[in-house]
Length: 333
Ligand code: XMP
Image 1 (spheres, rainbow, N blue to C red):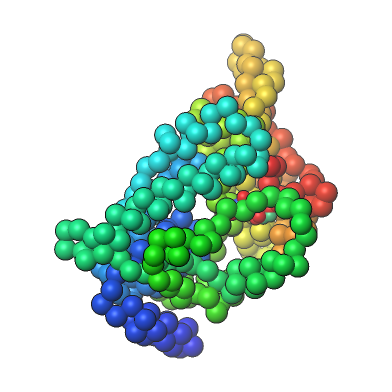
Image 2: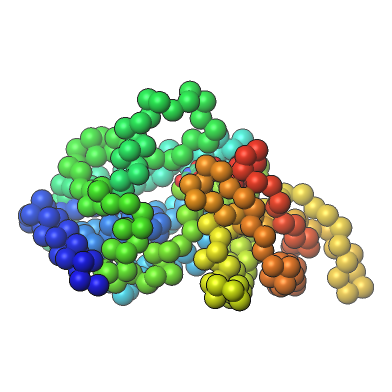
């Protein structure tokens, strides 16, 4: 695609001009925007970029390894992985209110990232120290923050954002995706070598599984949820709609599993089980402001529930969420 190739070249030239021989830090989350920003900036300045990937222990199954394989392994970018799961789980112990959990996760995330950024700013071992902070801000984020004044006073869910970080860290801001819409960001991502499955993924909230485990977050719950959710996503990718030829993953806007910390009775073999419940959630939406629950094929639901109950010991009941937004929200918390 010639047009995209021109875009990439122009973006690379702009980054090189802006950065010169200085160094850049980027917070890599594994999400589309930060991933595309990282791949693009790496193409432009290579070793002058250092990515910081904070693993809060609330990511999907194998997510951390996949991010490392992609960026450190395939793209040969410099990536620092910070395993902060014990810190996050420790601070979340005993906390069950959704907004309180979001605030804790958001605050710790910024603290951990800031500590890494401060080290990188100081420089060491052949690195003179970073002077730029790169962010995967895209055009809709720019509009959203500009229009914040018109927003209603009541926030339904506080999203974790890292506004003000560059100033606090004394770093200049680098935002190579600022003029692009989501679709353009995705095309650019493919053009700089990211796999389409990564670039066309469903959105994943910053607080991760922290808001998909209802109430108090525990490692045991997160481990069960990760395995159940991986099965759901795998089968959504496997099942195709005959008419369109598309997978149900691509036919839904967002799909995930929710962990319910309640136990229900079941039977397995000759024995009685008393285990946890999960809910499957899949929605179709164009703007995430309103959403319809997806009419997934029964065969898909059947396969997923059978696999989860058989493969994930500790879960003995699977339910499907048939609530649209409004009045329900997409996430359960
Ligand atoms: P709701 O649940 O409000 O979700 O209908 C709408 C969209 O926002 C995402 N979401 C979040 N994203 N931090 C995020 O980064 C959050 O705290 C958060 N809460 C909800 C949700 O996944 C959906 O795409």
